[in-house]
Length: 452
Image (cartoon, rainbow, N blue to C red; front, side, top):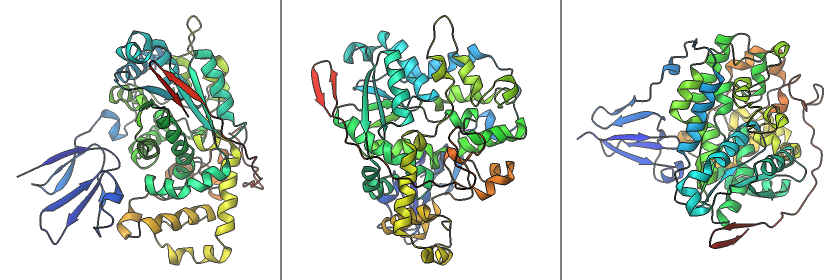
């Protein structure tokens, strides 16, 4: 008998040799690792047939071939496609809100949601005023920008503050739930993990989020160095194909760890098909023409008569989530790791961790924790590796020779691009972080008073 499974990211499969033909499937690595020696990730967009004993990809969109597309850019077509993707996800029977960092992607999701919420069944059940949520260190870029967007859209805004020590204290729980030792994923997952706990405590069960846009539109700052449109497009394809290992892994598991559902309209299949069919020449950064990263998306929602967002928010420079919550967050993590990983340990790293050998003390620190929870070789093989700068793939590191000496996933590693880039001589500034207390907040849903 043949059984088929359509499963997304975060699904693990185990073949048991002692029971011929037996296959175990779990939604998380931790569901198998205590009982199994060999397991592997169930690839997204695939079917598994026990009859053939193998995988077959069912999701086969036009962009998957990585052939450079040629459809002319039409801002209105792109706008309508994304509005439809957001509206589609407003179907819900539970209290919900939006994650709002104040960056372009989450702000557009919040703007469209606020604009179309009033006429939905969800509004009749839970009220027409949207609730928004943001997390960050005191004085962080995201907190300030999110507050401004929330005021502009008229949302009920909830600000959650955390300290560097709060985040460090949560690292082990984060790695256990996220099931990775990837540096940038852990950096970004920690504040999202802390925020998700707060959101769920308010009674909210679903949130809209902005993941996927940077991969589709080349929003990461390293895309400034893309040599041509073919390389640009191929890199966006590589990034989308790897989302289940990075941003989708974070968004899915950091929220679901607390029973919170995240919906991501940028990854709507119909919207991806529209966006990835655009001639990548239009997506490329061109300073001479005033085109910054994700220009095609910004231009699509630049409506003078019925503005979606304030201009300076619509054209705010890309800020990676782990940077936007406060620059001292990453600096604090590096300082903490340096205090727990010695130079001697780093010299012996290739012997201790021959696969995906950590090259920084921060990476070594995360790897030690991961291996404590998941010591099997199969577990470490589920985590990607390779050189990266500002969240690039290893292939894109070749675009700029100077990047090879500054391999850090932070957006600030994009020297000469990020407005607050690392100093070329001293890339890691481990300055002490200001410690603040979290601010208690209250949210009202019709018929319910919920305190956080």
